[in-house]
Image 1 (cartoon, rainbow, N blue to C red):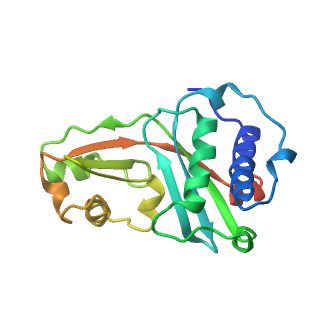
Image 2: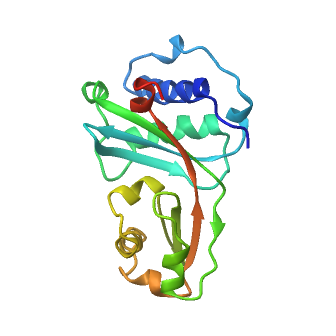
Length: 194
C-alpha cells in the first residue's frame, strides 16, 4: 500500500467537501484541480465522517478494499452527507460548521480466540477497528469509537447491538471477529498544521 502524503490528505479532504457542496448545488469541484497520486487508485477500505460542533453528523464507509481510494472518498462523502439513516441530509448552512474526517483502513484480519477473556486480551483499544459478525448480522466500529467507549466489554456490547444482536453476543465463540487499523486525518488536523 502506498503511503498517503500530507498533500494527498489535504486533497482528499477538499475532494470530500467539494462533492458534498456539489450535491447542495454549490459547484465547487471545478476549482479543485485533478490530482494524480499512485495511492489514489489503490483499492482501500475507507470511511468519511462528518462532525458538526464536535458531534457526529454522518459516517459511512466501506470496510473491504473493493474500490479505489479516490472513488471511495467521493462515494462515502455523499453517503455520509445525505444517506446516513441516523441523520437528515446536511444543509448548506451546516457545511460552514462541519468538519470532515477520513479514515483509510488496512485489510481486515480475523482474530482467533478461545473464549471471551482471550478476545478481550487480543483487542488493542484505540488501535483496532473491530468487525463483529454472525450469519447476516454484521457491524463495525472504527478505532476512534474507543474514545467514547473505552471499556472493552462496553465497546463490544455496543457493537453487538449495532449489529442487531444481544449485547453479550461477543462472548459466543461462534461469533466472527476481525480487526483492522486506520490512518485517520481531518480538516481540524490540517488547520492545526499536522
